[in-house]
Image (cartoon, rainbow, N blue to C red; front, side):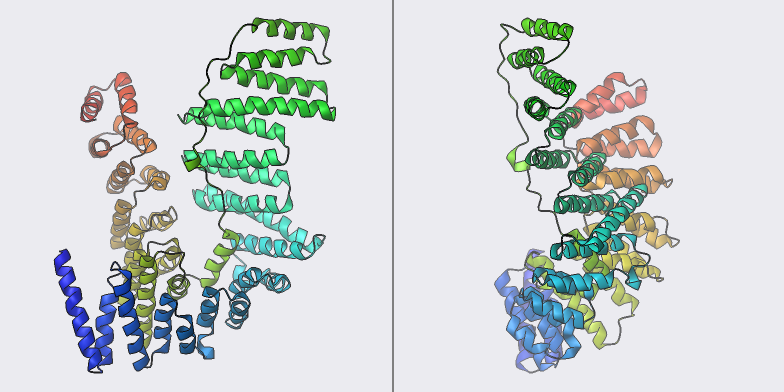
Length: 603
């Protein structure tokens, strides 16, 4: 197969060069277009094809298409000469952005009537008065009238920009308060419909608000909710990473009581999740409770608060077997200004620990390779930019093609999207349903989160074949948001769309897909849908997936039990074996017990 492909590429390349030498530009263009569809080839060969293709577009008087090619190649000067007129002001703005000429980009985006893009560019140019003006103009934008989430983001961006100019601005404070109110409401709405990742975005923005305002209460609310969503989503290591971040911030702000409590919560979570870090967090909690008690003594708080902190420290030290530290805590308790009976009791307890040595304590913490410095994505900008692009595949592809943050393979596919759309415009065939289906397929091959918005727009089509193509494309997009369309497609009136949703479910098996797949299984009454969901859950290979499949095996019968058994038999995760053994020991149904026994023999 590889040899056939190689020969086909060589043959196409020879034909392209021959047509080019003969001046047969349309035929040469078609051959080179076929070549650049092979987005996996090495860079120098692919770039050679593009350079020749750009020359051909110049001969064909298609300057915009030549500019796309030059934008991919980062030949910015050549690209600029192709799009000098006012007809291409939006593309010129994108080019300036790629060159990091932020001020020029902002001005051009304003001319192109893309205010969000302009405001973001003004922010990056550090032209804050201009940014404030644009954000303020968006507060009452008619297109946001029924977009509560985007409204919240505009208030947030306007408030932050205005506070940067005038920290005492009452108008800015009102905007930030309004953004917080809206974000809390929208987050609740997202959670109600099961879109936990969108709720998580809201809470991350509240975190940003807390950091910018230096208000620990806002920070705490953001972190607590982020941790809750991650915990509900079975993302164990992310939970601990967010605990680590939250604790670090609490310690930096000398919020010792909060930090000590968070260490305890992290310890309890680690223990429940079967992660070996609970004793580490208990030890850290004990030390922080001692510091908290010392701070209470210094600041003159009621002695009962000092007592409670030292008792909490003693409890955590005891949990890890550090008995000399326990004795020291009770000695400090006995020295407090407490009733005589309490002091005598603490003295007696301290005496019981005399002579006890601290055993060697192995307290492994979260490994450094799992810790991430959370450089949170600027979703308060990114989601508004997505809204402004309005699901336009052309705008999305243009935002990707020159951006080196994307791998070359994705940028190449974005270029193919742009050229395919341009071809359709040349033929006045943009409304052709076959073109829509082709664009949907190409968007899926981008394998980029940015492709979801245009696919969501394509799914809104009244033409079933377009919806089919949009849903099928999702099987390449490993994001939880993909399931928003999949769940709608499962209820689509057209049977082919529903069939496409089954195809998509079969392709979407990645760790974060577990909860959406489990939800589809629980909500559906269609045996085929439930079976397909079980098959994909089995391919996820996580402990949570194994536990779920065992539950199905024990509770269901017939084809669903068979599907769960088949999925479990394909799992290759040693951590699932103890779960199988545990349920085998307690299972009373002879048939299920036999199935569990067979699975144990396989593993």
